[in-house]
Every structure is written in structure tokens, then in C-alpha cells.
Image 1 (cartoon, one colour):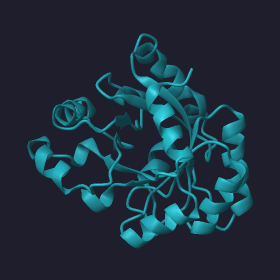
Image 2 (tube, rainbow, N blue to C red; image 1 turned 30 degrees about the horizontal axis):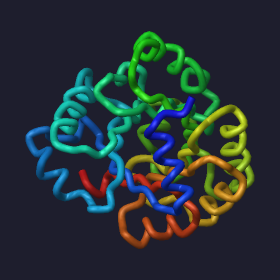
Image 3 (cartoon, one colour; image 1 turned 30 degrees about the vertical axis):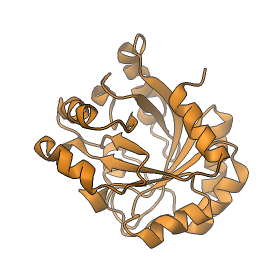
Image 4 (cartoon, rainbow, N blue to C red; image 1 turned 180 degrees about the vertical axis):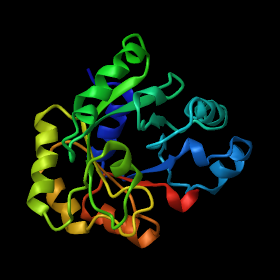
Length: 230
């Protein structure tokens, strides 16, 4: 059953309204500067994502509580581990790392999360997460012990995205990784968008307005920016 936040996303896609999420890493976020941070983010921001590959115990919850008091923007959990899940967000991106073959991140972490999610009011959005080479050794690769898909292998990326949709994902998230040297090529975004029938999120390495617009023009329904605002 689709929840209100996902339905709102679908409505925006149908109306061709582009979405912008700012990704907040709790380990790098100073809660005493929450107001200042929220004033600095772009006015067109539609969502906040909170999470990271490695987050100290309890930091995610502290960050979420600080944000919830100061903003009405929807806040989505973007967890790197089941231990990061907390009820203080609006929704959870229930990630499956489709680009890797480590069973822990294909099903292991998901099963471990159920004790927290069984009676949770969080809106759970199944998300096919595809890590793509951004020119650096990303934290996601290190933590999950998986390799990103090379940007040159367009067919593999497209097939992986479509497999995610066929497996039941409600979103596809193409990710170049935090601190990527370069973003995902527009032609990759365009080819993935052509074959999937669910919303497409693109993040990693997008630091400028030009890069953001290039992702939108190629077909991204939502762009995620993070490092540029830390």
C-alpha cells in the first residue's frame, strides 16, 4: 500500500515538478547550527535525507529530533545500517544494494531491520540502490565490501535498474557515492529513465547548478546533494 509521501512524489513526477533532496550526514551535522543550515539550503529543496554509511550510535536520532523541530520539509531516513533506523523520520528508504552481490546488503540488513519496523509508523519505500563509479573509493563500497558499477557499462546499469523495478522497488536510486569526483553521466540517467516506470533519484558528485540541471534534463525526478552543503 502506497503511503502519502510516496503518493506525493508520484504526483510531482506526473506534473513534471523536479524534486531536490539535501542529504545530511549525522556525523558531520552540528545540531547547534540547525537553523543556520536550514537557512542556507536552496529554496527549491523539497526533502531532507538523513543518513550515512557509518554513523556513530544515536547520532541519527539526535539529528532527526533537531530537524523536526525546525522544519516542515519531509524527512526521509537513508540508513547505512539497520541500527540507524529510528521512528523520528517521516519515511524510510528501504534500500537494497542492487549493484553488489553481498547478501548482507541484498537481504541481511533488511531482515535485521524488521524488529524496529514491524510496529513502526514510518512510511517504508522499497528502493533499488545502485552504486556507480564516481572516481573515488566511496564509503558505501568500503562498508558493504562491494564494487560500484562502471559508468562505461551502460547495459549493466540499465538492466540492474529494471531488475530492481521487477523485484518490487518503488524508487530507483543511482548513486555515485559521497564525495564523488564526478557525477553520473547524463546518458546513463537518460537510458535508465527510458526503461523504468518508477521515479528516478540521482545523487553523488553533484556540486553545481549546472550538474544539477544536467541530471534533471537527462530524466532525474529527484536530485540529491550533500557534500556541497556540509
